[in-house]
Length: 368
Image (spheres, rainbow, N blue to C red):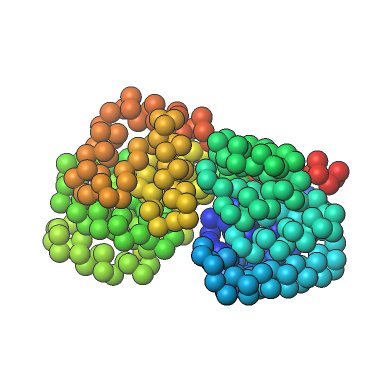
């Protein structure tokens, strides 16, 4: 198959697209991929590093109030459509896949106007503006959360597939996770992470919790601060507890995140769609602290979906402090029945076959 992928702005859009592309290549190694993204977005660095051809299209998002800048955005959209049509005619894809972000707009719209089969994937429980706009043109809308299907009533076809990032992590080897951390296999690990770039609120609560960690002497705590926060957070932790607990690691970044997730007994972090896909694919209980600084407050909706299913506990950032979080961690880690029930609920929500399901739909759309 010849597949065009498009998605940008955040890793939450980029990594699902890459997961779909990886599945396409595994199933049909003679396939060809082209990624169309913004020249200024993260995708312009991440995608070429994966060995995938990348072509840029200039586009910006609409402002939420009337302004002259929106007129310029319309002009950029029309230019983006023309550029996308040029790229699509040259590459001759069998299908085009969009995973969200402004750049998907002109690419998927151009594909629809050229009669090329299109699929969009929505990662969040609350659909993004671009995907809602594109749903009337797409042949299939794939969703990560069942409740998102109702937001695409004008779509020709909706399909609950889960998030394709789940497929990659479901294959992770927990033994490599223990080895990467230098922790004995079978140890009980609590992983606290604020996303690839870190989160100040979670780093602050990590510092508050350090003096309490000795109350769970058989638990290994792994704090991932994000590279830009690492030095400052490490210094504050050392000031809060001059004699650091033996079973504490403070790291700027994790290069083997899927394997470490597979080795973890509990994950504490934000509630981005890809992260939730990963913990549910593995059946790992979680404590979710949704970011309040995202469009449509979608992280809270994501977290609530897991919490209502019994797979996670949610703490809103305004209610967060070290004592509250440590109490929640202790209750889950000290009660095997609670831990087991949460893990089973998470596993029930997991869709480790998400990427194959999306590729099956692409085969249906293209007849290949």
